[in-house]
Image 1 (tube, rainbow, N blue to C red):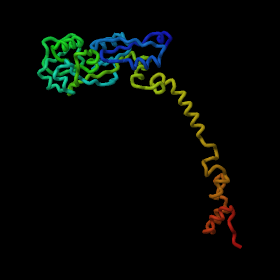
Image 2: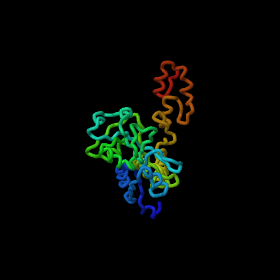
Image 3: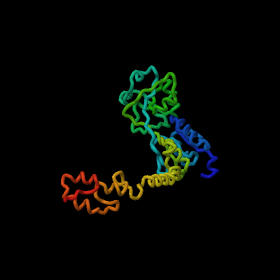
Image 4: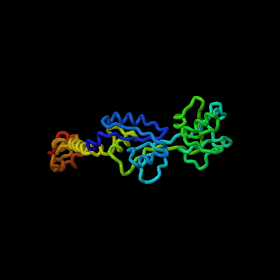
Length: 280
């Protein structure tokens, strides 16, 4: 990157419910010279913000429409139903869609769940936002089904939530424009994927690769045995010829090999003294 690039901030968009503080902290530790700017955007507008270049990358909710954006799925959220604390549903640990069949379930226009058929009875009008729907639940108008992170974001003392099973779940992903996969985007991808400083791939790994190769070559040269030394049993010509009757060059001495058939059981002893016995 150039000096001008280093002086600008990395812009990170995120949708409601996502908490990017962990990744921001790691970014600030590793890249203190490049400030990270957070841009909160509605879920429905997140992809448009990336396409218009108003953010370098962003945490969005899947699916991502179009092929111009790259996306790395990160995690899937639990789906819950938000109810008043005195509601019958609050007495259970989890509920099914069938148990909400007679309930009025609000379906806001910014809903983040990919429904084929939302559970419960639909309201006459859809609330504009999830925040508006939460206010209606608190007023006793109906119930609301959302990802757990949104239930926590809009927490109220008079409301609670319970896990809703057998329904779609919201998936969060890191997305960015394919044509704008910059060095900074690569750095942030490494952080989100949990890579350490030493294991980060991309441009830094490529820059470090030649140095690692040089260290490997030096280590390999040190491990090569010296000429004429092939191990403990072949360190010198004397050791090589002592038990085998061969010189360091590998040629037979003649005396040992010529008399070895005649020694029989005494061959081992003669070999230890280095000279075979001769009969008178």
